[in-house]
Length: 143
Length: 330
Image (cartoon, rainbow over all chains, first blue to last red; front, side, top):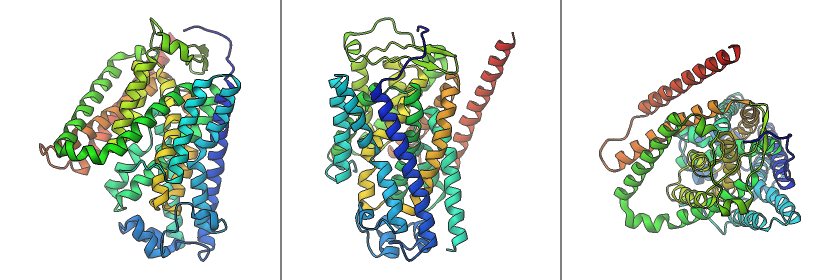
């Protein structure tokens, strides 16, 4: 191991780190505001916030929880039509955080291509593609 | 449930999540390893909701720590992408083949594989105990052509030593095969993989322990973006229930990352040894239960084993800190 001057990080690494970091922080803020809206305006929710915890602690399955306190599960991307709802906004925060690898890898891939580092651009594309397929429901990692 | 009670639960979940994230980021493991058994043991929450929320817990501490790790160079994006690509193939194949192979493998096969994994992990943990400095800062005698071609090495400023570390790497090809194997088992059995990714990087590719732990966190965040969506799409993640866990992971993970950057590699090694022994106990107990050798291990025994391991780890860390202070004063 050698001692050198403090090294500068490659652009792909910086882009990836910064995009993941700031989108995660944004998702965190959204997930802080969402529950506040849920409890302040109980009528602006798909799931009744005053009964959802009871249902969960009674050991009900996810499907039963949605049915008993929300009528039915409106789909994984339900936030698209319910941004002003407490749980719609919270679900948006979750979805934003869970898709962060796509946005960050896109930045990193562009930086890799600029540096003509094609192997890592392709590998990055492959990982991003897996996230996209999973997000659309085409690829399911579940048993 | 009253508004006050709901706020109490939300705040309690946040605090617990914060504490889990702090430990998980320093050890380079997913917080799900701690969250899932705890929730299954002490609450009656449905196991699918626990596993789905467990993924949120496992990934967000890794995601938020990605920024500081990438900025400072403690994590290496090229290694992370390489491992994620291999892990993705393995995990996807494992998950797809699970139902088909499970029919042929049967309960006995699953029990034997868990036992074998437990024994391998135990051997690795023992090697981590006796390996000392060799584990923390591995020496590479020869770099193979494939690893050299990938140009994976990337010097960084090591805060705890106050100098720049340039670490040569080796056996990238074998590491890819091993990570694919880890992904296969992870996808097949639905196991978390943080406990395996750090030793694979460290022992095969010769990645310094702190870098391996930081990479593991980044990798978990990246990889779980694939794993979490099926749960989100079927409604297993209940927004108001998952949100405080996410917020706790983000804030705890941020603090954990700042600590990992400054902490000595020995501290990370001891913490990892603890996690490895605990995971090993879980695998052996589960394997023996499936094979019918023993009955289901009571929850209190799990708690006692966890406490014993982590009291020993804490004692070792205190001893290490005292020895380091003595060295400095001499």
